[in-house]
Image (cartoon, rainbow, N blue to C red; front, side, top):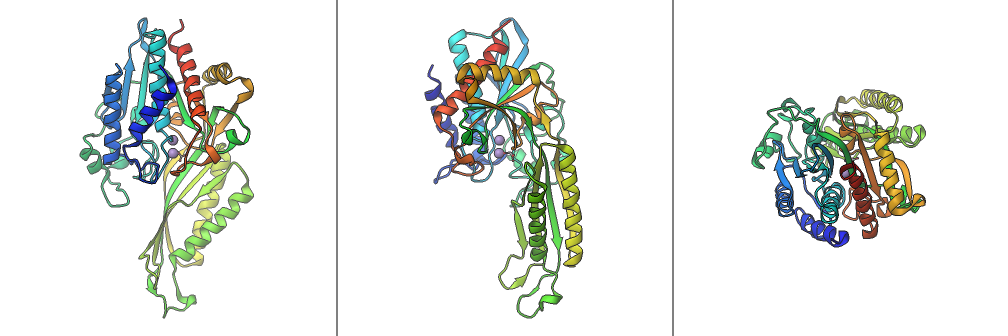
Length: 410
Ligand code: HGY
Ligand code: MN
Ligand code: MN
C-alpha cells in the first residue's frame, strides 16, 4: 500500500467538503461542509474495514479490534473542523495520517495485538461558536449543556439548533475512556521552527496555555460631524488604545508570550457615526502558567483604565482558560525513537507547541504525545497553509512506527 497516494486521494476527497474555489477550506462545526466531511469519512472508514460510529455530539471513531489484548486501545486522530478560510492540513492531516498509518499497518502486519482506534474530533478551533474543544471536552465528559445552550454564532444561529440540524445532540451518558492506553496526534507545526532549522519531524513535549476573551465596550453613538472630539465616547478609539498598549506590553514581556485581537466588530460600523460600541476578541498564550496569569492581570488592568479614560463601559468574558500541558514523557521518548528510526536523529527536534491542540485535553487523562511536520513559511489558519508531501509522508511513517511499537509488540 503506497502511503503517499493513499493520503493524497483521501486528502482530495475530504478537502472537497468545504473546499474553497481559491484553495483552502471553511468547515465550521455542524455546518453542511462539516456534515459532508464527517459522513464521507465514516463511509471511507467502513469501506476500509474499520468499525465506525459516532458519539452523540459527532465525534467519529474508527476501530480495528486487537487479537490478543482487544480491551487495550491505542488511539490516534485530530479535529475535523477548520477555521474560516483555513488550510487543508490543520486537523484534517492528523485524522488522515491516523487512517493511512492504520491501513498500512494492517496491510503489512495484519490485525494488531491491541486495538487501534482512529478519532475524528467534532470541533477544536472555537471558530464558529465561542466555545473551543467541543469534541475532546465531550470525549472526557468536561463539556456541559449549560456551556453552550445560550451561545450563537456570528449570524445569530443558536448552538443547539445547529447541532440538532446536523443530527447530533448533547451527551446523555458519560463516556468511558479508560480503555485507551495512549493517544498520539499528528499535526502541522503551524510555525516556522522546523522549516528554519531544516528538521523534518517535531517531537512535542508541551503545549501552551491559552486564554481567550470576548470584550465589549459601550460608549455613545453620535454624529461624526457635529460631535466635538472632547465630547465623544468612542468605543473604537478605546479599543485601539487597548490593542496598542497591550501589544507594546506583550512585546516588552517577551517571547513566547503572544496576544492577538483577531475579531473586531464595531457598531454601527458606519462611516459617519461615532461608534458607540465594539466587541472584540483577545487570544493570549504562554507555555508558563505563572507568566500567562501575570499578563492576564495586565489585560484586565489596561481595559479598566482605558475604559475610564475614554468614558466607556466594559465587559470582559474570559470564555477559554486552558493551562499549559506537558506530554507524557515515556510516549515522547517512544515518538523520538520512531522519528530517529524514520528520519534520523539529526532531522528531528523536541519542541513545545505554540498552537493549541486536542492533545492538551487528552494529556490530562491519557498518556499523550504529538508529532509535528513542518509548515511552509510557517503559514497556517490561511488558505496558503501547506507542507511538502514528502514531509507529510514522513509524519505518517513516524506515526506508523509508533503505532506498530504500541499495538503490534507484546
Ligand atoms: O488556535 C489554535 O492554536 C489552534 O489552531 N486551534
Ligand atoms: Mn489544529
Ligand atoms: Mn487550528
